[in-house]
Image (cartoon, rainbow, N blue to C red; front, side, top):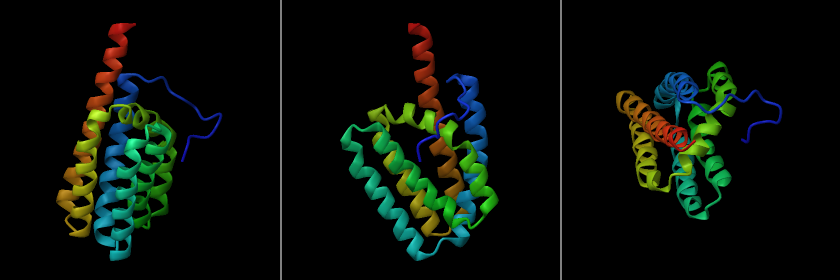
Length: 159
């Protein structure tokens, strides 16, 4: 989902990034834990298909399309929680997360790691392993934060 027009947009700064990703990490860790309990085999198949779609789109050079495929992957996990309030909170962060996701996805050198992270998250959910799913989700978000912080610092140095 692309952020809606007129949505409040915070400047891309290291502080704003960390604030958003701290909240995202906590919410997504909860989401993946609930998904471990609640996602059925059909949901796991849907998650695998979304990961395959994401991988196939990576060569397109269309960052918006790549980001939408990444969002679709995460949305399947959110939906599996069957928790409307959690989904609502994650959707409220969507616009802010989207901006950082775009910055991250501009770094093609991160794609192999990103694909591996998606696969390990799928495997943990399929195995109903909350501990591993939480660990991999946290690392997934931490890696995004580190990459985008590097981009922010690079832009500041060149300004």
